[in-house]
Amino acid sequence: MRTLIVDTKNKAEQEVEVAGWIHTRRDHGKLIFVDLRDRSGLLQVVFAPNDKEMHELANTLRNEWVVRITGKITERPEKMVNPEIETGTVELQPTKLEIVSEAKTPPFAIDTDGREIGEEHRMKYRYLDLRRKRMLENLMLRHRVSTLAREYLNKNGFIEIETPTLTKTSPEGARDFLVPSRFHPGKFYALPQAPQQYKQLLMIAGIEKYYQLAHAFRDEDLRGDRQFEHTQIDMEMSFVEEKDIRDTVEGLMVHIVESCGKKVMQKPFPVFTHEEATKKFGADKFDLREDKDPNVFAFAWVTDFPLLEWNDESKKYTFAHNPFSAPKKEHVEKLLKEEDLGNLRAQQYDLVCNGYEVASGGVRISNPDIQRKVFEIMGLDKETTEERFGHLINAYEYGAPPHAGIAPGLDRLVMLLANEQDIREVIAFPMSSHGQTSVMDAPSEASEKQLAELHIKVSGEEGEQDSK
Image 1: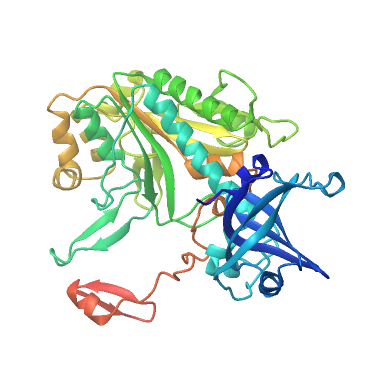
Image 2 (image 1 turned 180 degrees about the horizontal axis):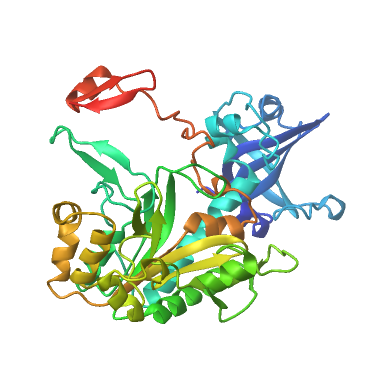
């Protein structure tokens, strides 16, 4: 049975079988030293010339070849101990070497942190880029954060429920990614910008506490902390108020951050209204740390965001965050009378940390009259409101509990925990800065047959697609 490399440190004088990749090979004349790598670490293997056939085979080994080796674990001489690796006190004296697969010379070094390599190469050969120690540690950290989030939410009575990926186009603050329907020519699904309406429907269904590690899709400009596709710890709770959500999320963040060996600067998290934050920091995202220590997490809440904002292009008010955020209770009457709209405030809250927005949420509208009024102010007539949102508004009329939610961004949180500057460093297969996928080189052209099945014709120099 195969032994993980990290476990060999406790198997001195025992026979083991290990397998992995050749990390480095050093020829010291008669002795050949190989560092064997698997996911758990590195192990030094020493090939001596007394076994001529195996020694000659070892002489052919090259970096990134996959091998299986059987042998005896022995303790290294005291002067040869390597404190830089976890198995630095032992080495393997092999009795059998099997070459599982050979490898071409990699297009870049794998034993560096990879920061010196151009983006195009790293994306094209991402499966090689992920072999480096830094990237593997980032993915393992992401796994740990996901596990910690589930652990905390499960203990606090939440139910993990998946919501659909193919859904209906809906205004969430960015452009939708559209998916044409073969069964319904000329009609489109949309990839969800967030599971917003579904999680509200789950509250109406009586679930009370929901979460999922949800994939969200937004066709917006790319930057270091934003991709077309991201993952969020999506949450919703019934029979709660804003403070209940904030307390729950504070507990979640402290659990994750401190479990990962970092320090939370201030507990409970300080709270600033949107107006206070913009006056004091000049923005609603800010960094409370004075010395910018990456091991310290300075969380803060920003509350009382504007409910609506004026759109100069449409000459109408539109939602500031999303159209489902509830107005503050004392502003409901003004909303219904359409008074002082620019100064109405929402029960909307963001969580910021070390200069980034790491979560956003709000108390939801659960009164159909208020929801219809918001759409009316946005300029949607009754027919459009019914066509686009009738399913949700009608659901309100079957007994909707007060509910609220939030969605911490998993990618940004892991980025901060890993002390990285770009979320691509904590995503296995991210987009490039030009919107191209790793390895598979999408977007790509569709075949004429595929387009015909979808009733789409591509025309124009920029490849505009017209639905018949």
